[in-house]
Image 1: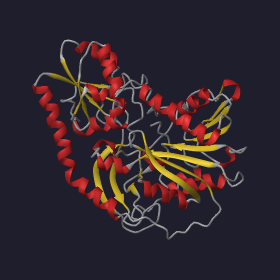
Image 2: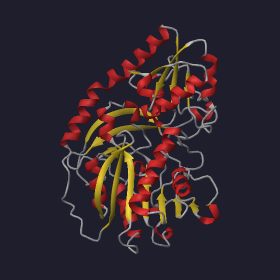
Image 3: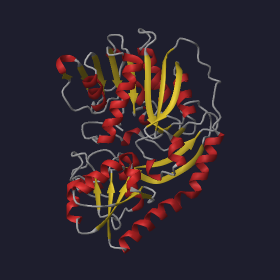
Length: 417
């Protein structure tokens, strides 16, 4: 959600043998989902069509390890990515704000108890850390991310930020909790990165760690073809996330789903126990799920096109709402020529008036929908967690939309409420 690459400088430059699993080193993982090309950075902000068209694409091939169940892009090339101030996948929505509030409450009650230092490795723009420190003024925060844009110190030092990649010397005192949210899926060597965190924490035993990543099982179960992106070189399940952390030396207390089952939470702590390299999770079941999904994928994309074309035939205006990862890739895969979707909407003001990578389709503010007041409007909601606020915004603009999800299935007003 915040999205940021925050790996250790020494880790990100390691060469990866894509014929082996990056987690367990098993040979010849099974290739499943394929993309001849994808925008390398769907969440970079392109302010002109020329900049958007000039983006270099990347290849995508989801390889799944039969031994440990880890999924990764076997065609991934870090040289195509640049994480700096031009990168922004912030979602300034009420639903995400409520999620941040509830997560802050959970972390405080479980680990902080109203006091202590929380270190956010890969903090993005710092929004979650700001939320937590606002709710709990006795908590101090340290955010680390090369794409961070704001002041390096806030609230008289309660909040500090380091605009850089993670390194061990940034831990100058014992944290009460280390979090790493939506960064590990961007890091080509996840075990090596977590091991570098483990090494940095050796001076501070028993510090808990909290990791959040997207859930590959949710993507496959919901046939979310729009959720396979180049920026995410890693795709985790409960088992492979646990196995990755254990290989890095962490004791895992629990792994659970969150945010409508779209995310995985891993909670653990430093351990000095020797980690067995032979303890693996069978990935054959995941390979089967992925290959079954691949057989249906082309029909899923075609069905979305057909449904949008049907709306057009009935003189609807088609609106795509949510131009972070999901919306950008849906638009690219379903409507690359821009003939089916009339507007692409995002509430992030930094993206409004900008353009999607490769195809250069304009992203607009919700207020521009006012011009459709006298017309029938179909809104494709890229993430159903935001349905209620999207419906409210449309009604505020004088529009009573037909809401559909990204599979172009109807969302009722009751569901959106």
